[in-house]
Length: 120
Image (cartoon, rainbow, N blue to C red; front, side, top):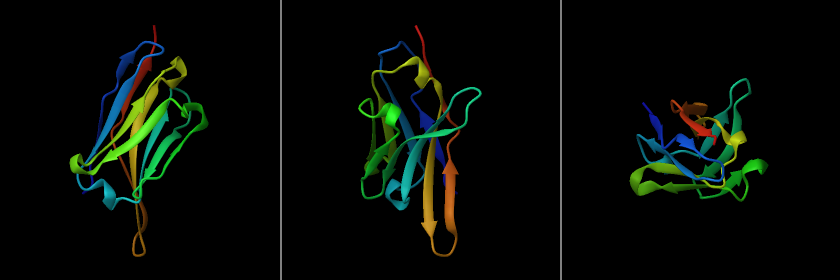
């Protein structure tokens, strides 16, 4: 059973930084991609950043230049470094891992989420 555990959320002032971590129960390279999503109160969950198992990264336009996603296979961890945080970044952040196979198709695994609050 795949488990994902997020950590690193908290309260930070505008302009500050946080680093979120997603610890996987197995090798992060076993997944086709790992995503960070976020969901603000009253809004739909949105994709923030993606890292594929060959190291490619993509970002939502609103976080480009501020957020960086990276993987550390030795620690089975994917991190999201968030700089220059804005109040609109306030949300619960979720780690999502995607596994593709011919037999089972697409399988998604989710962490429990970690709260990020940007406020003065």
